[in-house]
Length: 122
Image 1 (cartoon, rainbow, N blue to C red):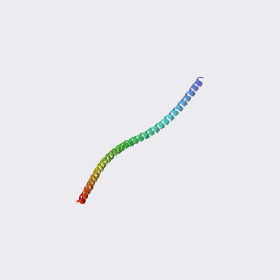
Image 2 (image 1 turned 60 degrees about the horizontal axis):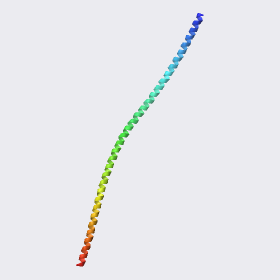
Image 3 (image 1 turned 90 degrees about the vertical axis):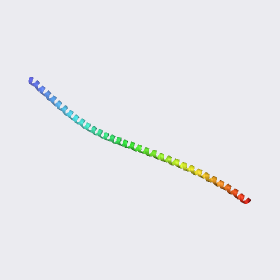
Image 4 (image 1 turned 45 degrees about the vertical axis):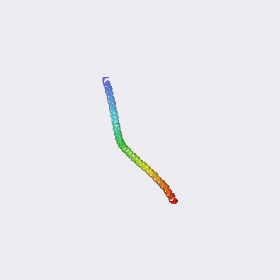
């Protein structure tokens, strides 16, 4: 009986060793799968970080370009305002000159009529 009990104990220990070995293999397999998944996630993270960095650089460049465009717009608006002021001044000067010429013409016309009348009456 003692031999049979010892045989059963040995069988039980062998089963325990076999179960432990299966569990060890499963744990190693799970560990390997998790390491692969971690590696994949790290790779994706790296890709996303590079993309984020590229977008931030593009954003910075776009901001700089926008600021340059706004300064160019301000310059052009100021130039157009100056041209408009000059043009309005020139138009007003020409209108005044036209009025002066019209007055002189009318004065000359009146004067010439008076002269003709004086000449004819003499």
